[in-house]
Image 1 (cartoon, rainbow, N blue to C red):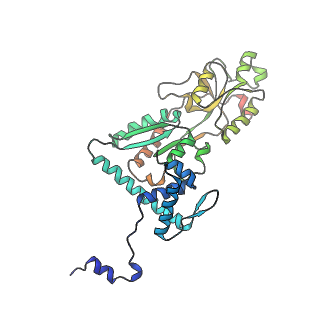
Image 2: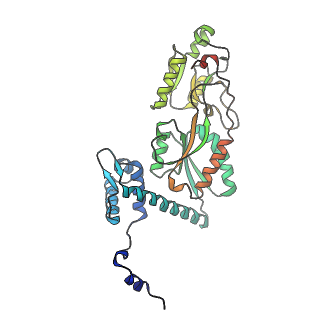
Length: 340
């Protein structure tokens, strides 16, 4: 005769009989966000929840599991060994819940699954159309919620669970030092964009080989005020290549810079994809390859999404679409740049 559950529990050693856990999914989500942000202040802003509430939930979670999860100091909250263990388990749990919820949405009449993806416009317009076409073959009812965002904002939105996936360049300050899962999508070479009427193919020295009007244009640079280490590298590159350059304008979008180059107002160093407008064409400028390292484009997502559908398929089609990208026409490195 089968024993009742109460009888089974009574027959177990006392150390094996424990009270039901009161840990909630809400607490695990807060714990995961705080572990990623490493501070209550930032996690509070990202989750749009009051800081005292987050602190209270973490304290309750620590009381429930019987272990300290964070070492707290003034600057940041570091995971303890117990916290690191729980983070790995929490990611698996949240991944399973996410996968279940997405699956249940497919059974709900009149609803569709949604993937929120953030990206710079140059990446979005060149990668997402083909990725969306491939995604529809398996998930025809899936909706993409596309956000055109700067890298730092995209990472913050990931922490706040307002994005599922962010596509950005690894040379941006936001891509480094994060614990999100990263998948390489494509490489994007840096080029020097020059007005169409100016040819650099045989130019070795700007001051000697160009007429004064063209020399003035080449020495006028349009730069990007992103405030990161990459900006410093570009400025050093200009100093080597164009020792007599001046900053003609600062822009916060590549498209504005390319429009100025197209109108003959200066030159700009930028990723080649920014000059492409999907399959329909691009800006009417000359692009010359540079000696700068290529920009690596990655898709970043919380690790609990990696194995969950439809996110796993979405990452796969992003890789496929990235491999099929056709860059705009790029001229070889001119003599002016080969000395670097």
